[in-house]
Length: 301
Image 1 (tube, one colour):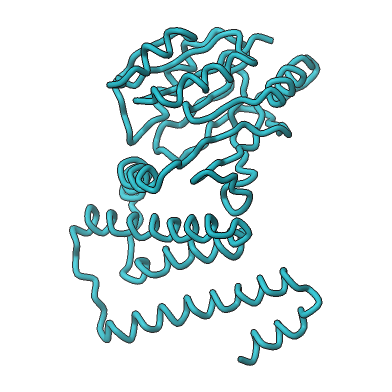
Image 2 (image 1 turned 30 degrees about the vertical axis):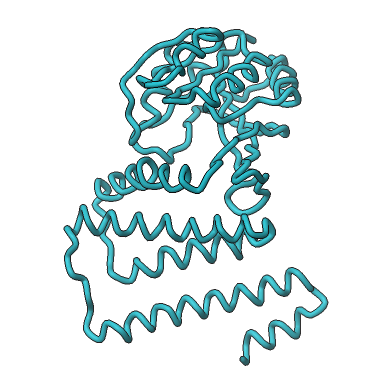
């Protein structure tokens, strides 16, 4: 089975070469779509790959990924980003899996090992973080509607065991810049085009729910300080997203209800009640022997 690795890159001179070297472990062909980079991305890419230059579209990154897929000659395609790496173990598993011509699967999800602020994040949304990245060339595409969408494959999809490595956010500035310029921009446009509406209390509910889900329910606390900060960033993401929708859809319309302070107080009390519930659920998870005791405290205190 021939394999094409397709990479879409914009100003990735610091990360791209290691990505391309890892791609060589499995690829019969490497395609790089250069999104009109202003650094040495194209120069580096030409040492390893066929390069196509396209206009950059930061709000809809997947259009250029789809373009790259159309240029691939392989029977199978691996979609890769410049900050991702294929390991020798994953390359071996891919080759072994695709050598079985009896398989009816048209794609495979691969776990992604996210390295954020220098640490492998092993809980919440960050692990195992399965991504559908390996697929038959004629069976997969992105819908190309917004930045957070998943690759869509027609037919049966399986899973691989070995992860690829994602050198995700390396600095706080990088996290905030991408949150502001790419992710919330795309999500805001998608939300507005859907015709959905917001209410004032979403400014509290969205961030509170995201923090609770990430830190408690998805056990982000097990990643220590990294997990705490990333959970709070998820809440911040939701607040920025809300504010952008309020700005663009509502034009900063005053949504202030009557008895505003007491309404806000009530929302925070609801959020505190949910957080308190999850505090005790987490205590039970940490110390099951005290399950009855913690349930009683959660109920009566």
